[in-house]
Every structure is written in C-alpha cells, then in structure tokens.
Length: 161
Image 1 (tube, rainbow, N blue to C red):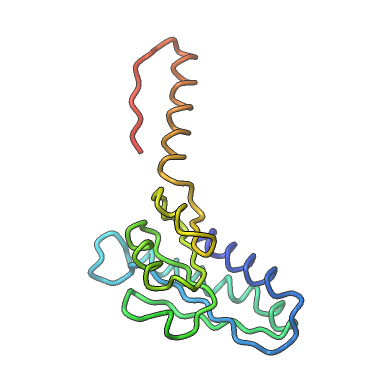
Image 2: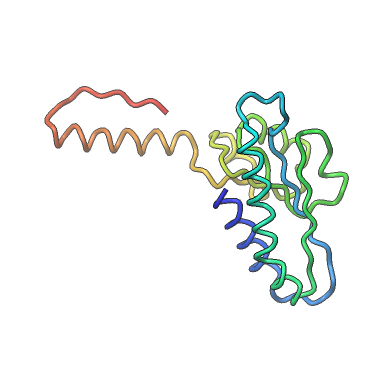
C-alpha cells in the first residue's frame, strides 16, 4: 500500500506544479477486489482503499494551489475507464489482468503496482509496472544463490520464482 501512496504523491505533486487552470484530474484504480476473487481479502481491499484515500489527502492541498483536484474511482473490472476520461489508470497487480486492461485502454497511461510479466516491457511508454519483470527477479535470485553457494562451497541449489 505504501507503493500506491508514494505513486499518487509523486504523480500528483510533480506532474502539475506549473499549471494554473482549475482542472479535474481523474485517477482510476482497477483491481481484482470483487468478493468472488479468492486471492483478495477484505483486509487487502480496505488497505488498498485507505492507501488511495491517504495519497489523495496528502497531495490535495498542493494540487489545489496549482488549480487541480483529484477525482478517483475504483473499479472491480465492472466499468470502462476509457469511456470516462481517465488521465491515468492504476491497474491490476496481476500481469494477465493488467495486460487485458491495457488492450482496452491503449491511449490512456496505465501503471501496475505488481505486474511482472516480461510482456509488459513491450507495451510502450504509456504502460509500465513498478515491479521488476519475472526475468529480472529470476536472474537476481540465481546470482544471489550462486554467491551463497560459493561462500559455502556447495554446488547444488534450486531457484524458483
């Protein structure tokens, strides 16, 4: 959740500092938080919503001084963000869901807080993830395992990501 707060603060406070006209900044958050989703919990959804709320509260005064106000919406895959004029979509944490979202919002900037598929690097500059790719994580884990086996004089190891 700290990542979401930091992202909202960085995006909102740095991107609009030089502008003066009153403007609504629409940030959409799309995530698999529906009750039937077995990998999410009520606690995760509560923390996710709280992180968005806190990020907006912490940046609202600075944005207001520049003539901007954040309008946020959270979706559980039930609405089209592109049709409502989003400036930015903070997309799902799962790679397969994020890749699907990008197909429906090709011209709107999107960011995922955790998607790690190698395919995300090929999406172009409007679509990014804050997480390293699976390939980068696997290489880092393999390098660390190799360093540790050198120190212990053992040559057997297995790395799973």
